[in-house]
Amino acid sequence: VQLVESGGGLVQPGGSLRLSCAASGSIFSIATMGWYRQAPRKQRELVARISSAATTYYADSAKGRFTISRDNAKNTVFLQMNSLKPEDTAVYYCNAAIMTTYKGTYDSNYWGQGTQVTVSS
Image (tube, rainbow, N blue to C red; front, side):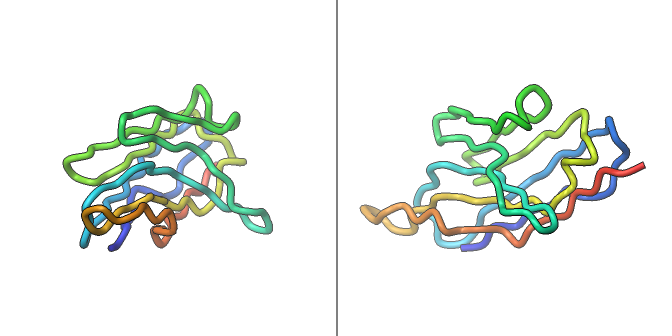
């Protein structure tokens, strides 16, 4: 199973970016998908997550600015980030809880390689 992120880059304060993360491989089912971020010298933190039923949760820092969504048919999760601030600068990681076989269990230790988001003028 692989999670591949895309969409990071350099953007000015107030700008927008849309991150994507596609899961591929031997996948039977995906439960929660989420986005985390890690800034230099800081711990990795949850930004937002979404269940298979589209129930969402946002960190306080993301509320009102970021929107998480998913396409279950394509095993893909998105993060639309608006009104970006310099403090949003970090490596953003995709995470998913994946069941690889029928009647298996969900494993939440699937991570993407990370995509850099830099907010700077």
